[in-house]
Length: 236
Length: 389
Image 1 (cartoon, rainbow over the protein chains, first blue to last red):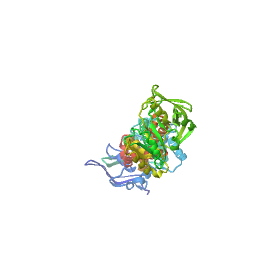
Image 2 (cartoon, each protein chain N blue to C red):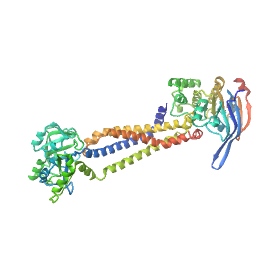
Image 3 (cartoon, each protein chain N blue to C red):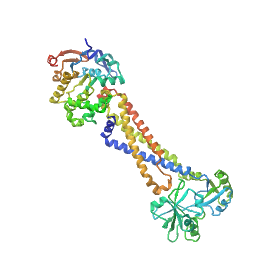
């Protein structure tokens, strides 16, 4: 049997504020297979975003192990971790997080600067990613000249530019209207189905969660139940 | 892309960027000016002739020496020749048109000052005509005077009666190839001054301000100056003889410790620049925390993200410095042509000053970026992403 794409084992994360210690993840274990589309749900403060940060190597746990795509993420740090993140993970944030001083095209091209690709190749990659999200004609627009939905699609194009194995999306539709949210979810679904990307999204939106193969419920830093979505599984 | 990102970040807050560059420009201009003034002051000392002494009253530069002293000094062993140098203190038409004029021994000036080269007219005409004058190339260029022109000069020190102005005929134009003599001076025959005072056509102190003493052998400077001072030890007017370099140094010293004052001013300017750029870079770093988080999340290493801020700081410093240097260079001609130019004959923005300013710009850029860049480098992506976007 092959290794899971994402594996968390007995992960503990504690935030310290003054003398107060807050256990955000308590001996949390989870596995997500390659090519899976998983949704993390739960009330605010249940540790969803923290979990996503640990998987993406943005934060480090106090205990336990995090493995992603065969790499022992919780043991990596510094340059090695940054390099791994660039190669393996594509992030999509609720607030889009595009650099406001760069155009849509330049935002997508930005992570490609970390590769040895020639300028021409970088251009091709960025154009392809923008084409994939249907925004090639908005390439020269700055983020403030785009709608929220378009900004999020640019952010997805940026996450795709490096062809990552895993896409982590933290409430990707949280700031969007229904129509834009659906467009973004359609896109994520397509990336999962047609390009085989492993996708983990954090969401409060049942409609968004309904696109996932499995819905992982969290509460107070602990794993609740896992619902398998037969419709989504059948469609993939 | 890194350069594009730096440029975009700079132009994103273009008012702040322009103000910082502007403050750097003014500061660098001031530094170039101060350093060039210091060099100018020093150049008059450095370029002073080693085979010339200056004899003046031991009481003060403002007390004249009896005319009879010149003949006695001429007789001192080791002296090649002397010439009077008498400050005239006049101006052309208005007091703003101020420049140096000296009454000299017309026939002795050039033998004693070989650095003066006649470029137009003839020295014979200067020597033979009592009202003749010799002008520097800057005076020719500034006032459009040419050989044969008659130039009226008004002197508060030697008021001419009844007309008020002295008339000088331009006999020749000179160019000095050393900084101890500037090209902004008018020389005329001392006898013209003396005879007018004798004939009650002019008023003013009798005697001569200083005597420039040429030496046969520069190695005898100490011996000859001691001999001259010894000669007049019992009066009627005691004499102080120094090398030309020492005379220049004392002259500058009359205004207080100018080099120290200017250096202190320069240090203050540098300190102010560092604070101005540091403030800008701290603001830039604070605003960019969220973007830094995004870049780190995308896989940019800490060092690379911090380097962008350093590059931004260096860009601001180098642009401001370059503009400041260019402005200082543009001001060079204007200052030399202005009345202030008299005091700074060797004023020029040297290659050394340019290099020093550029090195300074890099150092200031690095110092100003050090704290904000290190803050950015230490930021964890997860914390940076939590900040306001």
